[in-house]
Image (cartoon, rainbow, N blue to C red; front, side):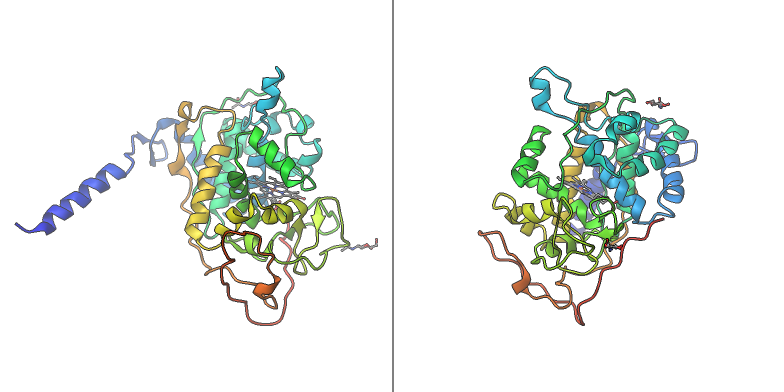
Length: 361
Ligand code: HEM
Ligand SMILES: *[C@@H]1O[C@H](CO)[C@@H](O)[C@H](O)[C@H]1NC(C)=O
Ligand SMILES: *[C@@H]1O[C@H](CO)[C@@H](O)[C@H](O)[C@H]1NC(C)=O
């Protein structure tokens, strides 16, 4: 008896078991795992066209990813332990109580995306908490090489305003940030994994004179350039300099947050940070895992409905291994993980260049 057909049969059996079984036929003719997920097909088409300007990885995408964090991190076990209200986590309160929460100092600038998103959530009758996590997941799927984040639906639309001072500030020390993140359920390693998000990021408010200044040279790619470039020795300010929460960056047109600088070099975080540079798949998988946790802060994930199959498969990575920007060498890297050497990276050819701002849309 030949082994070949047996093997083929086994492979078929595995494929049948592994493939999620579509159970619901939606009015639009598409199928998904649960009828409650159908509405998200309509939300998807609408926001890709009308919020993300045709499925771009641009300003609204970046802001939507940031908003997932600013809503979800409004949760404090310590406050609950003291008998106070500690926030509802990823509950949409930043949108329902935007008049309160967007006035918190650490939420400076998020009012734009809250108001841009709100009409979509209202038009489709979905909860604010669900919408914010969905928009972040769809948005980051537009970034080349990006993650395909889990999306669970069913968060209540009822929430209370989050207490202030739960969102980390770029001027906070690593110890302060790690303590705050631990209070919301995240380890130091997980906090580093969450900061991978800053590879598709720019700032508008830390130095308001230079809006759209990105944190790395490739703000529309979900690559490891942010992790590499943040470890380069800082030499200049992209604007007029030295704002609260800002430190020197290595490249003209690039912005560096003090918190990213300090965490990447902190002995408790540096090895996790460096470990994410070498393998794109590992970096993406770690981000997917930690974002599944972030999106359900304050919720029991088992009580929500898995609508992940609505999230688009991200654009393939159209880039190679991370590089050192032109003009830089490994000597410019502040290698900070004592346990293992910094990986060998190639330097981009040509003279040192300036990084372009993320255009407003
Ligand atoms: C843990 C400490 C963190 C601090 C101190 C921090 C701080 C900041 C600051 C100051 C900005 C610039 C905002 C502006 O001026 O417009 C920013 C941007 C951003 N942050 Fe964070 N962040 C942290 C964690 C996170 C996490 C966990 C996520 C998402 C999972 C995230 C996603 C983003 C994104 C995508 C942007 C870019 C927004 C845009 O381009 O408009 N950040 N962050
Ligand atoms: C969610 O709550 C807001 C008020 O905070 C309300 O305007 C909106 O209609 C509610 N959405 C749903 C789907 O109930
Ligand atoms: C720097 O400051 C000068 C004088 O205050 C101002 O005119 C200029 O617009 C600023 N430029 C930037 C890039 O911040």
